[in-house]
Length: 191
Length: 141
Image 1 (cartoon, each protein chain N blue to C red):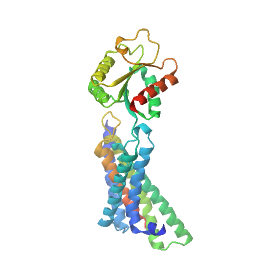
Image 2 (cartoon, each protein chain N blue to C red):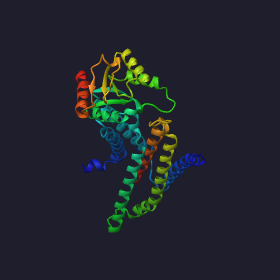
Image 3 (cartoon, chains in turn blue, green):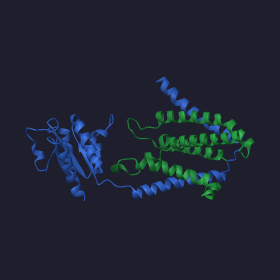
Image 4 (cartoon, each protein chain N blue to C red):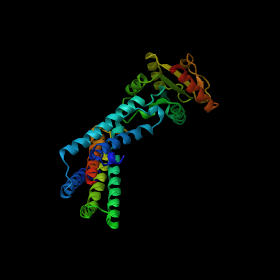
């Protein structure tokens, strides 16, 4: 703790010393730094920032679709694999695991993520099929009229009734084929 | 081309313009296609600018040292004087770079998040980076 505080104050002192030293050397070396020079420099930098703002806003490719990946923590590995596959196809993935921090209100954060997504991907496994929190998020997605795509990640004995109205994608037997089907399913509606 | 490079405005105007534009641009275009939009964090270019100015400074100094050695320097007195200041400038720049990186680590991040704070994480480092580049550009005559 004491060392951390020392580092904090030392960093500020170091910055002040270095700025003072550099200004002192500039004056001593008789390198005139007129106000007009400074103004031109700042103008150049501001214009550079403005150009980048305009150019990259105009020409950056928007994601073809934004999906929210809802899954159980035990399915993290398969969720990561699916994320990679979707991102390779220019689909932006909001993974619920990346949203939370200690002390966050999970329900509020998920509601926001659901609102910001076009499609909800619901990863179904034996461990997640009866997860109450996931079911709550699916109900929330339904109330926002979001498209829900359940993805079966492993052999499941009894699928919950809440899944049956949706067209599912099965990646349990052949991941590559199933993931490609998922990509096609997402993109066919966004075209 | 020579006339363009010799123009006094090139150093003061075009170098910061290109430095800022290219640094932000490279960050944006190197991301995955799905995340290519401009983010607030893309404007955190302070460290890149300080490192660029240090490289510019060392390259310039090695050039004037070579000119002095071969007797081609047009103003040997000025070149000698600049080389005398160089170790101090490098010392203060590297010291400042350490201070800035420690400051960003301590104050620059949102609690428990992988996001930079606006002032201590983005604005102050970028302003100091521009300051370092301004002094370097001014040093290069």
